[in-house]
Image (cartoon, rainbow, N blue to C red):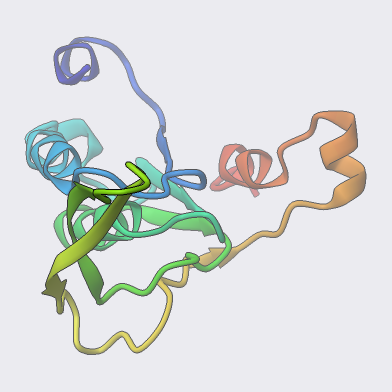
Length: 148
């Protein structure tokens, strides 16, 4: 993807993290590092990140990383998870029921200035009427940004 971003004309690059409920944060860390090297995306108004109430854990870590490493503009709703949180999950199987469970081993104090969710620069909530019509209010707001 980075190769294509370097080779093609790109007006806006949108990263949608609304339904990123977590996982491995190293994938996004590597991506953000490479994204920084795409010179045409360094100016404000080139990278847009969409967040929402279902953005948790590694998704929130990605928001924090993109916020610190790029000039991204954030749209959407505050994240469901806190910027500072527990992570790095370990899985285990309960011996009798064979159910799988997990527990966190690390606390990530990524930004002490945050006491709660990551709040986007531009708050946009999805209306139910537009949802039923298949219109994504947040994406439409990103597309319209800079045209007014």
